[in-house]
Image 1 (cartoon, rainbow, N blue to C red):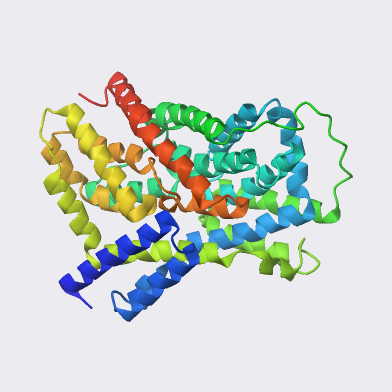
Image 2 (cartoon, one colour; image 1 turned 90 degrees about the horizontal axis):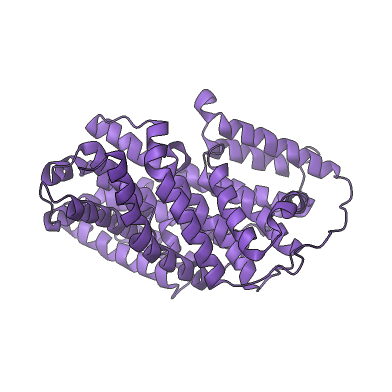
Length: 433
């Protein structure tokens, strides 16, 4: 199927899959398989496009992250790390949530991969929950996991190299518009509101939506036994992995391949820390979900549906020179809507491709128009919009209902509070006329 028919059929498939993923009317893995089946049966794209998710670094980082998470749980290293953090985060449940949110943001400065940070932190968070009496089924356990799962992709949007959408935006802006984004100006422009204010909002919402208390707060835990050989080997593997992640700008090896090597080492006989049977405990349904999501975004782009959606939004957008407040609101809304349609990873490519036209229509500088999208793709309403949240939910055993309750509330609070404050901050900096 080609041309106009392919565009309409892809649009119908987009609505169908996003609707099922958002509402969970059928299991996520079934929706993923439905996408693969319909896309190929209807010949909407080549197999290379439909199954492109399996060849992306994101798929392999998810898979390797799950192996490392299993290793941390089975060896007990996750519990040991949690014990080290427990003294700093154990004063109260709000303090635990706020500490996890802050730590998730701080980790983004030294570890460039959202999915890698999720894979590292969720097992530690679960061990912390166990230490504080937040067992399975407790709302506080869901709150703690979601603190890491939501803070990791959303707050890291304020750090240029720490987020896939940021890198997509930067690469597209340089290629199409000749704009070069730099680390510190980007951080200064976005961090105070999109990280600071939204971090506080996230903490308050989690404490409100998932109220709980720490049963072991203030208690003196029993001393742990000395580290085992498996724990020591895993610590070395993780240290080397983190070092390579932190220095990827020097050696050029993508975080996914570093993570894949770490996962392989964990499973290797004698050298590794867990048996090959640990692979059988991995939920491949999450990996297939990520692959389907990325394949759908690629299909939307290849068929031309993405470009058509973008130009349709631009045609309806009431942009005009001099109407700064309205222009800012409309452009942020376009980025938010694109994120809803094609996820946070796909939206920057479409938005940035239209940035030149939007700058001409609004009278704003091209750099300002490009930067406005960050607040848009950092505002999500459903977990499917950000693959790291999906991975955290799966690893942490959080229901889709609980995750959606938080993302809907957080998305609304971001639009009502963070976006207006971001406008004020930009005016203070002189970024807006």
